[in-house]
View 1 (cartoon, rainbow, N blue to C red):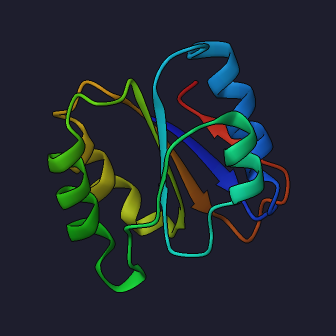
View 2 (tube, rainbow, N blue to C red):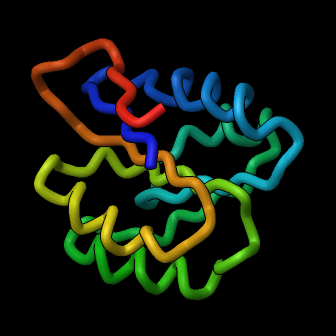
Length: 118
């Protein structure tokens, strides 16, 4: 799992750099909360976007989404800016899937994006 930490709203640029480098021409989905995925950017890149997550039920929503989408994508971007305490739980949910995961994490101390696990 690649984790992108920071509080810069342009995190999507860093994500796209990773996607271009590792997944050119392959199926990638982006998943997030309603209204928080940067749709103009996603439409230009022709990536399917799913706004199926809810902040009060993130882990259950992620589990449900992954069970429905298993093996449909090579990589899944979890564009949710979750809090640090959810990272280990999300890693546990995703570890049995073959897809690569990119997770955004909100970190108020870091403005520029920091990439872990690249």
